[in-house]
Image 1: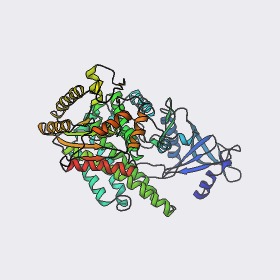
Image 2: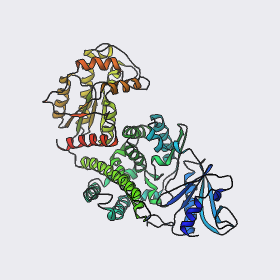
Image 3: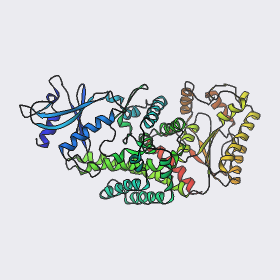
Image 4: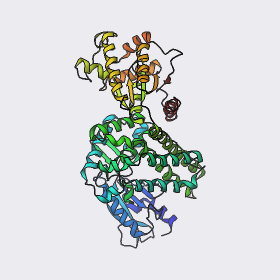
Length: 531
């Protein structure tokens, strides 16, 4: 059947049965996806990109069968079977008819499109509970299947280098179209440096049993969140085992990168923190930024390949260019992070300060993931000293109870002692506290000097109305903080604000577009590199 007629018939409801009234046809660079009232039909395009070969109908049948088999691991209720698209009597298409075979398709149950995680991220309704549930599913998945020598081989340096080199080769034609020459060159050099300076980490990951038969395409567009107890992770890589036999850091890092891309930076940080806490995979940080950069680059590459379609409208071409440039820029940010880390000779001491309710802990979490730093939170230390549950709220009046000046002084002393123990081991630290008194900030700076740490003081601020909203929301959440509006207002009167002599960065997390967030994260990185 001629291609244009084939596509037309895929949009014909009668192709899928007399009861089907509507069809929505979507497509990527490798497949068509037909959404009907009840079922979804996925058809592979006859393409060959080298890393993917669907060029013959036999190969498309095989990979359809593989896709169903592999995806039943994480999404058994959605994937049904492989069906035949055959020629109908009127020269159209029908499912499993008696006419000549035209193509194969995967049949899946339809699910609500609004429950796809990407849509829910755009609505701002993905929660930490969703991330908790996702983490548990993935950790169980990674532990459920035994690895073997063939899988482990794909975690070796040579295999990783091959994938990276292939990416750069396949994006050469898009230089100064989807990726600038400067970004392309920087990323190529940064990856080369990582292989030179950190070649041992890949073997360490193999020894830690971190290479598995994973999902391989773990982003929010492939996750359905019906409820926290009804999550489907679909559309894993079936067409090339080297993209599925990977480090779990590459898999989980893909999702973390995708959350960043969708401006859910702080859910991304929470994802990694929760994953490490539950899996005990502490060496994931050795390769996390590397794999996040790799994943962002692959997304930019894959989406950019659609530009080879001569039938695209100018508007669609511009849309693709915009999306790919954003991915490549994000890839560069992660590469800047791992480049800084491999050349770092001194620990970093981040001081994240400001009034309660201004996003300090949120930013501290982000910094701890980006820079693999230990978070020391005064709320936690204070309650540990008092011997009480860290999540038990104590709504004492300002400067009273747990928050009287003597207790505050003891808390800071414990915080500095703990920070010193990390810094002396060349481990970076994020201090998460109000630091409302200048003498405590001076003590932190002195600690940095004593331990030869790079000192990065940050002051978080937001408009009063935003702080009120965040503090009101916090009252209904499980949190270690006892901050509330009356404390914020009292603290605002007594806070010893930074003087002109105190070099610091001001961060306003109420400026919350993707571009504003990235500007502030890069501001911190630039400040750090200039110290």
